Image (tube, rainbow, N blue to C red):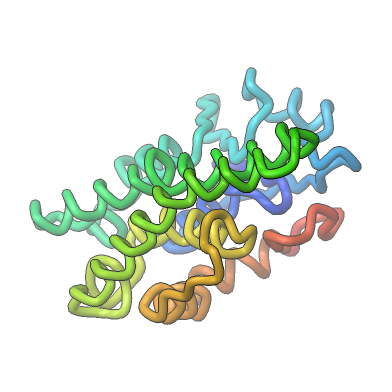
Length: 229
């Protein structure tokens, strides 16, 4: 049995962890679950993962349970990325990777999810309330995406920090894709550098292997019953 087990919930941040594992060339087992009709993780899957919050991704590495996609990224890179492929050894490149890795959740996902939660929770508010709230919150998303667009124009390669994917791309890809796919504050705007970068990420061999292995589909909460071998 592989030493690492990935608990993978469809249409979630779990693709980050699968992509990391593929880039690191690690042997791992996938425990896959669809979402329920309420778009949540099944209770038995939550219990099996060992994560007290019942959130995903979660990994087991031996007897160690690790959850939160950012923490998993840090853990895997610290333990297994001895050559600095995903977190470079160069101090300037390293801090850039760490900056983007944390911005993926603390900035991009935070601002995008605020809009999604508003849609879920104030949809029955008086006419105009949701629209006004979304308009106000979209400013943060627009600023975030413009920052990413600008930084990509300055990169010496097709990825955030050079010519191959790093932990920065792996963490940021999901956040940017989620914002665009759900139209969270995008207001019809397009960002050509981001679109090119997303395609480069999705054309990378590690990402393609991760998708084949897991059946990841951001728009599908009812994917394959078992992960591909």
